[in-house]
Amino acid sequence: MDKWRDKMNPVSVKELVVKFDKSIILDKLSIELKEGEIVGLIGPSGAGKSTFINSLLGMQAVNSGKIEIFNTEIPNRKMMSKIGFMAQSDALFDELTGQQNLEFFASLQGISHQNFLTELSKTAKTVNLTTDLGKKLSNYSGGMKRRLSLAIALQTDAPLLLLDEPTVGIDPELRQKIWEELRAQASLGKTILMTTHVMDEAERCDKVLLLRQGHFVAQGSPSEIKEKYNSTSIEEAFIKAGEELESEDLL
Ligand SMILES: Nc1ncnc2c1ncn2[C@@H]1O[C@H](COP(=O)(O)OP(=O)(O)OP(=O)(O)O)[C@@H](O)[C@H]1O
Image (cartoon, rainbow, N blue to C red; front, side, top):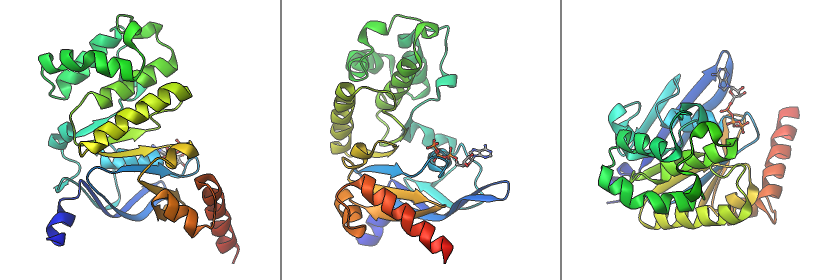
């Protein structure tokens, strides 16, 4: 039974290696993500968080290892309908309105026009763009574009969400609302992997992966990570993990 369940994990990564030139960015990473969990990927700038997310999306050439999403090896275009992800700001259309952009991506995501319209006001409200939907994106700020990208990920019924810095530049009140939505979606069984620089967001995740020097140097619930590093916050654990690695490097 357990074996079967393991096989059905939404995300299974085995010994993933990604190099840029001669630098090894991801060094034999392995991880399993379970249904309905919110997982926070944290690590210093340049650690490879976006590279990891892009690898899961099949958008990053990998050197070796195996990635399976719902038991299907990645890259596989058919799996894109099972993954909700935030479009890069430069993939959005400046000449279209916010609503037209959402509609365009909805059609790529296989969402029926009827369902798109039914969900539109809720999606727009979650990212606080209700009154801006009719404006062209050329009039959007960078932050508004990011919120629209997040809305594109949230409007799918894909069972896996991969979110790269979903709440960057978002004020605390709206962030609260977005977290409520993420929790609601996870409680329906969606698996959510998000990168974040915001440590109090990491504290809200079910599981945290700490990526440093190509490895997950710690993984577990926020309380397990804090216990491992004898810390009172994830931030402190994060700093201690870095110091530990540096002192190992000096040996
Ligand atoms: N296409 C590329 N070609 C060469 N090097 C790259 C490429 N993309 C990323 N890198 C390098 O790989 C490393 C990891 O980058 P990545 O963007 O994944 O880090 P990150 O953890 O997401 O960083 P941040 O928190 O700053 O967004 C960095 O050193 C970066 O310079």
